[in-house]
Length: 123
Image 1 (cartoon, one colour):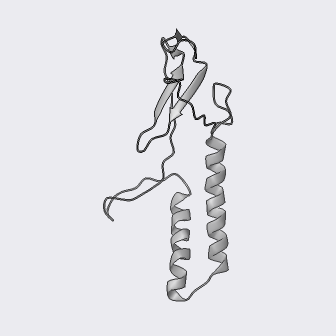
Image 2 (cartoon, rainbow, N blue to C red; image 1 turned 90 degrees about the vertical axis):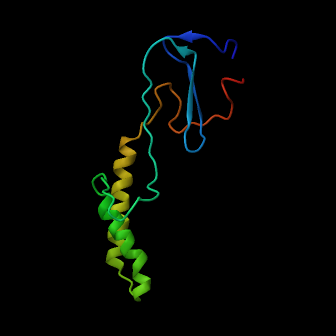
Image 3 (cartoon, helix red, strand yellow; image 1 turned 60 degrees about the vertical axis):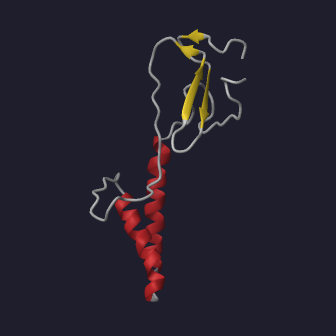
């Protein structure tokens, strides 16, 4: 990168520093104006209390309920193939909807999910 402080109307490349819990996004050249829209999927890790209200997209409650049923079956000496099939279908349905909403290519022409190990600020 010849000039790290260059500006432009449209960036040519993007770098994402994946740190936990926050990632940092860098674009080059730095745009003189505009908006960068970022979408981020996060795992469900925990709830504050059992009374916490949780808003889930369509299909998630069913998939979670069926996954819980599968987890609990061995404790009761049960095995139900129909429940297992229903859980797999619920999971596939969610994956299908989620993959349809994912961009196929990033706006900059890079493959979706592209990860590069260099840092545009340090070279």
